[in-house]
Length: 224
Image 1 (cartoon, helix red, strand yellow):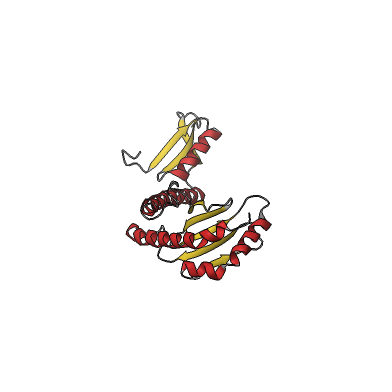
Image 2: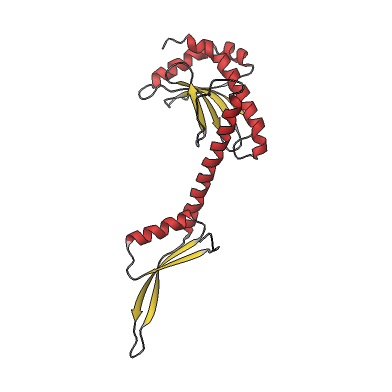
């Protein structure tokens, strides 16, 4: 259809089956063209010659159009984020080995171990902002242990923020299993124009380097 520039396709069958309906529904959710499934029957009125009767079985609907738009947005989002991470990781390797073994992801975060099980230094990006964080989650049934690690690090909050160079957001996240300590970055995100990405990457990488340097000595002293 792309080769001939067609925007509409009609499939005519004598015996519509569920697999036919599923195929047309999937095409309407996944493609930019409109697909219709029609049932053909022969009818005869009186002595007139037989004539075809076409009945619409399934075609585009507001629901399938909305689902299709959502799928397209998700696919586009994954592609953009993977490019964003690929460029960040390539640039980061020039300044730090922290995430050198990490591959680009399609998701909104990438991370690497911080030297203790369940602790990770994560990059996080959203549409128009980002952050770097120390994430604490030692797995199932670890709520109390995660909070204890967070509280132990919080005892050195003043010293850590002094080494980091500014205040951090200390999110104990009571009622949830994990904890995080992060720095918000308002320079931009993955939905901003690609030329702006360079400034976003620089800010994220420089902030991550400072975050790791500030936390490493205190992570090493944790009794876990």
